[in-house]
Amino acid sequence: MSELLLGIDIGTSACKVAVFRPDGAVMAQASEGYELYYPQPGWAEQHPEEWWSAICKAVQRVLADDQICASDICGIGIDGQSWSAIPVDQDGECLCRTPIWMDTRASDICKRVNEEVGAEAIFSVAGNSFEPSYTTPKMIWFREERPDIYERAAVFLQSNSYIAYRLTGRLSQDVSQGYGLHFFNMRTCTYDGGLARALGLSVDKVPEPVACHTVIGTVTKGAAAVTGLLEGTPVVAGGLDAACGTLGAGVYRPGQTQEQGGQAGGMSICIDEAVGHPKLILGTHVVPDLWLLQGGTVGGGGVLRWFKRELAQTGESFDDLTAMAAGIAPGSDGVLFLPYMSGERSPIWDPDAKACFYGLSFDKTRAHMVRAALEGVAFSLEHNLRTAAEAGVHAEDLVAVGGAANSVLWTQIKADVTGRRIFVPSSDTAATLGAAILAGVGVGIYADFEQAVQRTIRMTRVQEPDENAHLCYERAMEQYLKLSRTLSGL
Image 1 (cartoon, helix red, strand yellow):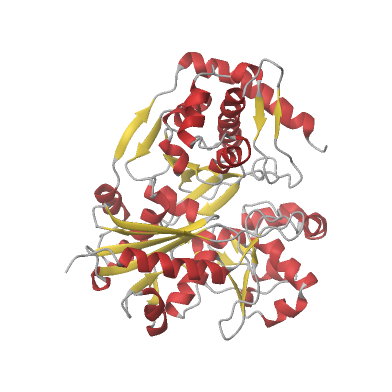
Image 2 (image 1 turned 90 degrees about the horizontal axis):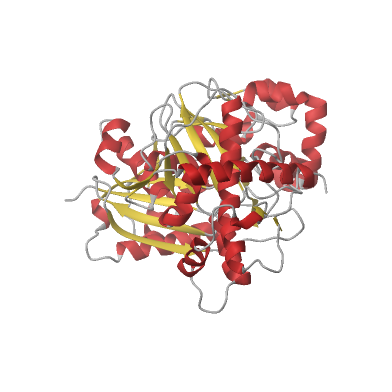
C-alpha cells in the first residue's frame, strides 16, 4: 500500500486538488472553477455549496487516475481563501452565499466600530486593524443587516473549515484563519470574550481554535459516496491558503519570506513573535509557535488575466504578453500602473482605490502597458516589504509561489524592484502541497515540519536582482508611491 496525501485548495476562481507522494511529487491533480458574484458595488460573494460541488468533481477526477487508489490516501489537508463568513445552522446547512476577501460592504461599520470601540483597543488584541475585508465586520453586517440569518447561524465558518465539515461532519476553526476574527488574541491564540462582547458578537458563534495539523475527524459515509474517497480517511483542520503556500514553499523558519503570485499578490514574512503593524496583516503560521507578518494585495496574477481578457488580441497567450513586455526597458518609459483592481488591501487599505495607467502618450504601446502592469504588481509587493521594515521585520531572500512564479520575466522584475534574490520551488502547487504536508504531519507520515520540508521542497531556479535595474526601479518606486498618495481620496 502506498502512502499518499491529498491536498485541497479553495482559491478565488477555482479549487485545486492534488495527490502527493511523501517526497512531494505530484501524482495527479485537477481543478474546477466556480462563480464569483458581484450583486452590488463593493460586494463580492461565492457560494460554499459551489465550492463543495467543484471539490467533489475534482477529487473524483484525480481518483480516476490509474496510479491512485482511494485506500492509499492516508490523510487530507485543506487550505482556503481568507476572511469568509459562512453562516451554518445547527443542522449544518449553509444559509447563504459568503462575502469573500474582496468584499468591502462593511466599510461604514468599520468606521463606526473604530470610533466606538477604539482602533487601538482592537489592534492591541488582534494585531490587525479593523478593516472591511476581515471576517469580523462581515459578522457584524449579518447581525445588523440580515438578523434572520445571524440568529439562525449556529456558527460562522471559514472556507477550509466549511469543506472540512462537509467531509467529516465536524465543526472546526484552525488558528491560522483566526486572524480574520478580531477577538482572536494573536499572542495567546485564544478568544477574548470581552472584546467580542464590545463588538456585539459572541465567541459561541465560532468553533474553538485548533492547530492546523490536528486531525479533526474522518471522511463520512456520505462524503465518501460523493467524492470517491474512502470512508474513515483522516482529515486535518488545514489553514489559510497564504500560510499553507508559505509552508509549501519551504518557509518555516524566522526571516524566511514567501512572495505570493496567485490571483492576488502579497508576501508572508515568517517571525517567531507576534509583531504587528497597523497597515499589514498578522496571522499565525500553520507551523506551531510561528507567525506570519503579511501583506495582501488585490493585484496579482489577476491583473494579467484581466489584461488578457480585455485588451489582448485574439489568440494571444500569457506568454505572448510577457514576451511583448520583455522588449520594454525597466520603468516602462515612464508608464506606471496602480494595481488596485478591487480597491486595495495592505498597506493602503482603501476599498475605493482604483487601478489606473499613468504616463500614456502617442508613442506608448500595449507592450508598455503590459510591462507597467507587471511592474505595478511588483511595486505593491515592495510597498508591503517597506511597511514591514517599519515594524522592525525585515525580509531576506524571497520564495515565489503561485502562477506568476512561472514567468521568468515577472519574477525578475520582482527581484529587481525589491533588490532581493528570489527562489522558485519545483512545484507551482505550493498551497496544495502545504495542505498535504499538514495532513502528513497530522497522521505521522512526517516526524515534524522540518523533516516534511526537507523531504518535499526543491528549488528549480534562483533569480538575482540586477543592480542597474534596481536603481531604475528605486526612482520609479518613488513615483509609484507619489501617484498612489496623490490619487488617494479621489
